[in-house]
Image 1 (cartoon, rainbow over the protein chains, first blue to last red):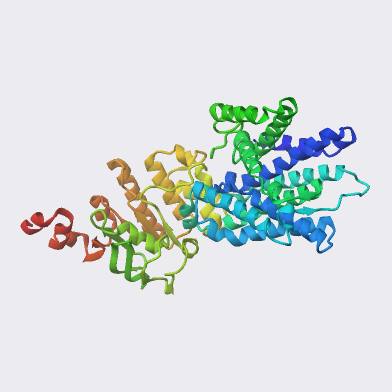
Image 2 (spheres, rainbow over the protein chains, first blue to last red):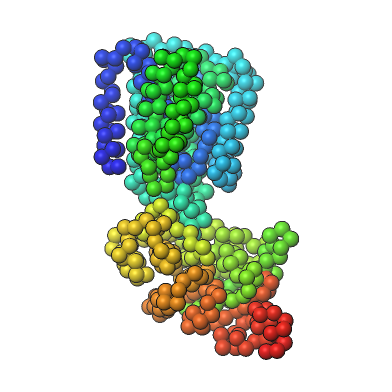
Length: 299
Length: 242
């Protein structure tokens, strides 16, 4: 485990200078791989360490994306500031609803977060400030860094979310989350303020997810409720996490990289059939590796 | 002086009145046994005392403080430790980690390696410290739960059927262990138990619950002769003939 975490760190750092030699196509492919990896790491904080599957976590991707876009367009904030505030908006929303939402467990919790995602998509499709169903156009980035900037932002979010997972794996804070995952009542009896800790975990997940959403919005320059609250993204994130290994530090990296790269290859080779091929891969993973590539104790 | 006072505790689950005005006091350093037939409300009472369940009405006072509305984690920090009838360990964590969590979050002590080892040594689990809780035998799991409660540096221990499912040898070992905790550390203990032999060795005083009410309070020797108690436990016919 220890060695794998180091390997992930080294690989991540080695990818910083890569755009110097990569084609624009691979730069975009890798940027979307980083995006999925970050989302998977965010979910790992919640499902892997705290034991709560937020199937509708993409709700916070949407909130982060929209908040960033609105702050840039309506408030005229620079992207960097808008992105951080957008992430904070997503995490504050999560933190505020967590005490009520996290009274539910396992599939009840999963379904409720999905309902939140659907409700927010409907809400954003009908508000004026979000541009309704038409969505929002963002300015195109014309800075001197070119499109590489998105590659580097996504890579930095990936690095940050990896470090958050590493910290949780090793720290006292992480043990409070693991205690909640293992047995919430026993965690309380052991002095862990479970409502506080699981709300913080939910907030961390939403913050990372919101940052990814905000960066994605600026990257594709046009957002609408359909693209920002896309259930397929939730599915991919969960498959990546289950494939890589739930509750491990290296698992999300392995899962998201293999899934997104394979998906990209399959998509470019079998445009018509890629959904089927991906479905078959998912089934094979479930049949052959039920605990993921890195099986953790909790898996 | 009473360390723990429960006054007029009522609790219903739907139409099922589980506790109907239970009051009890536990003195500092005392070991109180709670006995009663299945479904008489013993575990619910422990849950109310530890904060896992909120009573419909009634008051719980610990060390002079009204803790009726306190959540379990705050009671844990105050020094109320407990075990569960069906063990609730952190199954995918090691014995060391199971003890480390309450030590850090509950007792606010430094969760040093020495302190953890000392606690595991106390319950006789030093040789299993690296094992995952889920890999332990039932008797070892019960010991680890005890260790986890001890890590809180408790003033009061609530033990919910620690002996259930254990063989007589294991029962005797854990009886000695609890006696040691009682004598060495002076911990006040409330113990729910069906294994009367064990209880007779541990309890200074016994209360009997039946259908959510206290029907007896006194010495163990008197309890086994009490007509009310025999009736509740064995039924009308035996109660009459006793």
